Every structure is written in C-alpha cells, then in structure tokens.
Length: 388
Image (tube, rainbow, N blue to C red; front, side, top):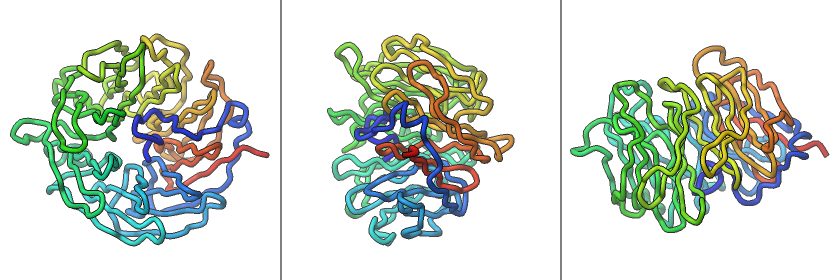
C-alpha cells in the first residue's frame, strides 16, 4: 500500500535496503505504460502494481518487468494501488474506485463518486472498510465538496459518507491518503479553506477533531501530503506537512501542536506536497519550492539535522531503510524530461546513489527488501536492485 503501512512513515516492515546496499543499486529493468506514473507502485509477492495517467493498471513481474496482465480504460490514475487480500484497489481522477482481481485483472466491483469529484488519494483498507478521500479536479474546476467515503470491501457498497464542511459546501478537499493508528483513529489533511488535519473514525466516518494550520486567505495552499504517525516521549503524535511550507507534529488525541517549523516558502502546487518519512529518529520532508531538496529534522522538536539541496523540485515521497533515504526529483511545471532517483545517507545526507531517469520523477519509491520500484512522467516503471 501507499507508504508501506497504515502509519504512512515510508519505512514498512521487511525493508532491508541499507546505506551499503543502496550504494550498489543498479537499474534492473524499465517497463513503459501508457502515461505518466505519479503514484507509488505497490509491491506484493513478486508483483509490482502501477497505475498510469493513461488509465491503465498493470501487474509486472518484479524479477524482469514483464507484464503479467493489464486493465485498460479505467480513467487517469494519480495515486497508488492498494492490495487487499485477493484484490487490488485503485482510484481514478474520474472519481471511480475499482476492486480488481490480483490473479488476472478482472473487475470485482466498482464505485462512482458524486459528480465532479476526483480521487487523488490512494484507497485505504481498514478491517472490512475501504476509505476513500474526494477532492476537486485539478484547478478546482469545478470546486466540489471535500468528502470521505467508507465502502464495503467485499461489494463496494457505500456504508457512510462524511462532508468536511457544514452543509456539504464546496472546499476542504481530500488530496492525500489517510493514516490510521492502532487504536482505530484515522488522520488526513484537508485543503482550503480550512487547511487542516482531520481526525475521524474510519469505520463510521464520525468526526473526532479538526485542527486548522493557517488561514488560507485565498492562496490555495492546500495540505496535500499524507500524515505520519509516530510515538514521541510516550505519546502518539501525527506529523503533517503543508504546501505553505510548514511541517508540524500534533498530539493525536487533541490535535494541539507539539512543534512546528517553516522550512520553505510554499506556493500553490509546490511547497511541501510530498509525504514525509520517519525512521525512528528523524523525519524527512521533500520541498518543491525554494529551497528545493530534502530536509532531515529531529522528530522530537523539528530542529534541523541536515539538508540536501536538489536542482529540481521534490514531489516524490521519500522512503527510508537502514541508514538510507530514497527519493525522486522532477517538475510538474517546466522541463519534464529531467529527473533522478537519489539515495542519501540518513546520517548526514551525502549521496550514495544517483540515477538520471531523463524524465520527471514525482512517484515515491516503493522499497520491498532491497528492491526499489518507482514511476516517471514518461510512463516508465523503473526497478533497481543492489549489484551482487
């Protein structure tokens, strides 16, 4: 699933990629689909699942990149696939959610969002409920109400829908993927006008609290990164990055800020749009606004540990392993024929590995063991392994 697990820290169980093995990464294969791959691929039992802007979901053999099956005509996909038992769930910018058989790509069920809504967030599976976040299409045209929906995992039947604004007014779009803690509370960022972190019950959609980060004042500085859950001094906190350039940790019970830090000067569709990562010591946040690059911050108070500056913006959600941070670079606006995959030492940010993709990389890397898969604007899924 997106970020590897429900706490969304980019450091899932089973990752064995180390600083030493990252320095030996080499391209294993490259397979092209029919449009940009902006979502992080999902890796499960030797299969890489990736969705394209061309509306295709593909299952690829992780050993060699050969296509196992494809499902075309789904609608543009910007998010990550989610594996749920024998099904892979995928959401589209046309407002549809599909449950597709892992074995052969056959459709089990599909669900259509209300008119005008797009789904940028990845599907979230909690117990037998599929949680879906809804927002406006690109450019807020039209501007639609931000909603969360809970679907039955077996049938796709709608169980509950929650509007973020009173009276289901337009705004407060859900652009990112919720995180869920062990107690069963879900957290997700919401867009303008509230620009907030929202806590809710994923089984019912019931609101628990909403903590606004800043007044939007018509600046379109949405919160588009997924939150990260971690423990700090015996209590649970939720880390949230914002397009405005702010990153903050809040108390999971109350939504009150524990610490906050401005690390960039954000503008619409820039700033801290990539979801941060956490490795037990530092949090790692990528910036698409000046200064572009990756920031390593002490998770206890937000103080700076180090910064690695990149020539290109960072929209790619970093992943972390044993002493290594992996991320992509590349623009949304500008020269889309330039980009890279970069592995940095988490201790000090020095470069362990860099690969010129010759295409913008906005996808976050998926790391399974020491295997790394990522997508690019050209429509390629790229896979890397350490050289033996």
